[in-house]
Image 1 (cartoon, rainbow, N blue to C red):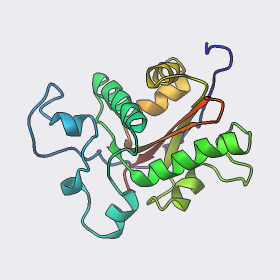
Image 2: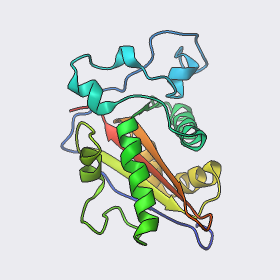
Image 3: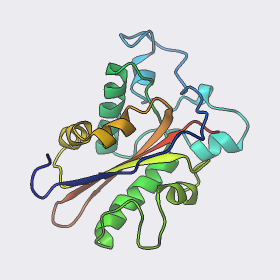
Length: 197
């Protein structure tokens, strides 16, 4: 049960119509305890450019890269470590998904709402496409009020629907959203996506 003043929400993703492909993994570097993957790849910290499709638009719409801030990076590391501990592939970081997630968590504060669908009736799928991501097959976790990456990660782990999103084997990409309002209240988001269909 979340502490008073703490809220979180999760969008349920229906995967029955999708045939997700395996996530990209690193192919060079030193081995680690995560099944021989380089630690950078295991935690999703490298751009993984060699593993992305070279067909122009797919790599462009994924825009694999690195998190914008240390908080975004810590969120990615916590998620990928959790996935590795549960026998799942780490997620590749998408700057396009980060743009969509950042815009949404800021919007939660700016327009005083807390939902996956904004007042303009745009949900995570539409927001991912609007940010230039490849497709609409995404899931989302949002939260507000937690004071650290550890706290929000634990809140999501302790909520079965949020946990399901974090441990969805079909997800291949993620972008983190983070915003602190003028009062110091923190807003958090994870926008997760399947491999390009």
